[in-house]
Image (cartoon, rainbow, N blue to C red; front, side):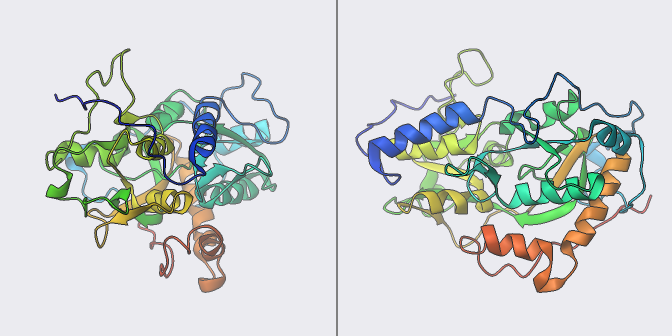
Length: 344
């Protein structure tokens, strides 16, 4: 395994107002990704977001043919819905440093973005109050663990549905179509997910489908830290959160980022010196709301929320949120992906 040589110069900062802006960016990354967030009473109180012990047999990845197919939509109650109602809050695992998806507005100090709007819609349907939410900020590589350890009810965090993950968590129907793409400085000779990555240092988030893509075909890119997965992990090329990759790129410590084009568009909006490379994404991926395996009543209820969220064409809640947060960086999307349901 090759180790990236050096960490580059810190004199080549791009965007975000130079050194001062970067200091703020680093402080944001450090302070906002490690602590749970609260909305409303401001406490978590040690209470578990526990789910029913009943579970379904996990889908075996090798037998997976249609990972985006979810449980039919239902608005019925069940044990997990009742626990949320008894608690009076929906506990949602989210991001708070992905611009336009889930991020903390530095002026209002509130969480905003496309994913955050969807969380509010779920809370309003189950609890009758869109603000009855406890937000918990979780890194990319802790999304599944947060559900498995009953720290959250749902994860709404640009989480791709795939065959490997449906054996670990239960997904709703897809609410957004994305794809992997390369983000690099405009002046870079990197021009896409191809041989131009050879020998270049490429950053991804731990536990992301971008990392999986590079592991399958890297084109000679350097994308793993020497001590990945150990206590000495450098967190230079594989990092806990996507915003860390943008910071690394701005510091000149990496040459490019591979991530979902939806997230990359938000990062490009934060720094006009970078851009998406290549004509289009090199994968097709769908985001879903994740719940704990066995929380079938909650998954079916989220699918019911998503049916209402899609309904209304150009005036639907989905399109309203898209126009608010994403249309500038990802123009031309006509609407959400159509839901797919399992027949058994």
